[in-house]
Image 1 (cartoon, rainbow, N blue to C red):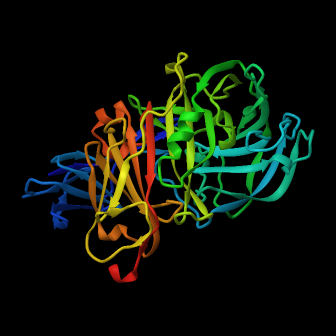
Image 2 (image 1 turned 90 degrees about the vertical axis):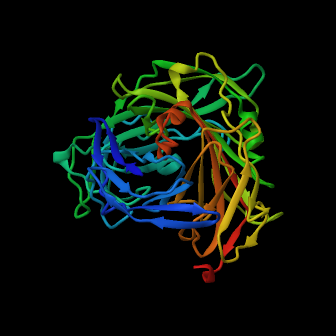
Image 3 (image 1 turned 120 degrees about the horizontal axis):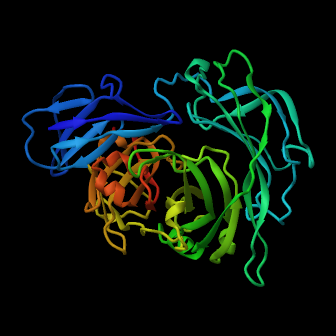
Length: 469
């Protein structure tokens, strides 16, 4: 059995491919025997290649780092796509202190609409495409109304993850984006529709930053003319209805439609598919009527960039049946190129998996797991089998959790013991529908292809005693 794994790094400079370092990311192979998983030894082959000999026919669980891929194939491509350049070094911190000196802001304005979230306000955000870094500098009343410049030294800036080391010689840069509230066309007799649009922007020069000094965020923003428009027919009610089918008692979070720009990739791969945002509209669940309107926006990025439209709703899941405590996880999501819309309605491409079971019992009810193999099963979505599934088990946030990638015809999986963290966890199963993903033969690229739809179902609380481990 042959495993291939390449890391494809997507940055403004293009796509750079590096073979996997199997010393850093080990590969293991397990053959399913009923609910038992029997390990087969292997060896490193050529660059980015791992070989397993004398492998019997069967269902294979290939472990890559902390993730698994379930397959019957004997030649498997486990390559992945990553945002940014290779060889990024990380600092031992999740925030940095910045020296901010920004001029030529559009006069700062508070939202002219009644209340968030249907009334987006102003914001200043920074991000890099060479290294994994993004942060919000200021929102809403963070600056004074009418303010057009900002000088502050020592501002704490929190990154979404560990702060990277910026290297000037590698071309590491920061974009600064200013967003402001705008008003879209209202339906006849309807209330005004607010949305947020990028209005000013600046790409700062390459910088060195390793945390030993203040991060320089200094420059003059340039206007982003609103020269483009998008007519949308957003079936908000369809997204909300599916969100409420993902778990008994599930509720929809605010629904989001965004226009984003992304780096051109290979074939239909686009990384990332969630930003940078050019314009975004939010609708609260209490105002989940369908939206037909036109969004006007600008784009400061080069003309060779692709522009996508993304719609999604996150899920509010009760911590226990009938409980008034919720956590946010999973989504009903849709993404496509703006060029493919052509007046087509925006609606979910796939429905969530159904009839979730954990070891033969109702998977939506809270329970304490017993020792031994944990078998999870489900039924395909009501609209048919998807192109693949992604299963994860972890804390409510799912941040940093391990995943199992399965083919679209799968209806069950054995959860490997090392994926069962002690404490309370929730099981998530995402159904993925994407023709490009189905054609790719690369199971670990489930969220990288466009067009794409996904829908999550979420279990009840699963308590995992220490004794299981």
